Length: 152
Image (cartoon, rainbow, N blue to C red; front, top):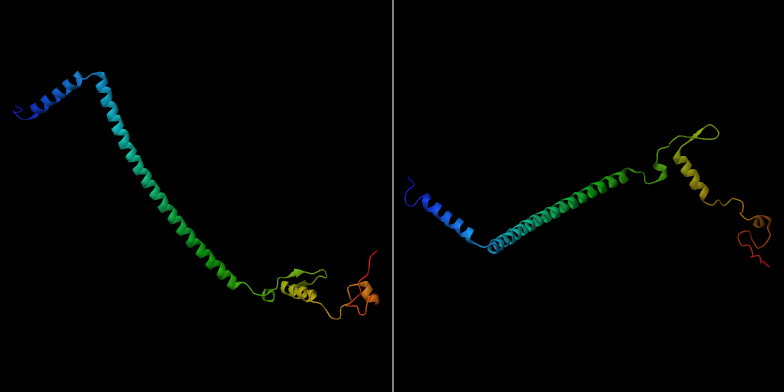
């Protein structure tokens, strides 16, 4: 039924192998198992190193993608800021007047306030002197050049 060279030969080989295993000592079996464990451990180490290399390359790729996305976002934000800078008035007088209540009941705009504050900050030639002694004429040749007072 099986023939001369078919599965009977394989069965004989298996039986011989099983008999050889049974004849081995416990020490030989332990050494064989230890060697098989070492081979399996080495194979697993290679597999895990491969996974680590793949993971590292994926992380590096993701990092590069994040860096390029960040650069694109920065460029877009810079362009938006530049567009806003172009729309922003360069001088205070160009700002639209915003109505603010005045003490007397009227209203005044921000541009008017800015002009008034800049006019107030400029020295007026007809303004009275700041020093009371300079106003009374004490101290020096002229109100703009008083002589120093010695303290004792």
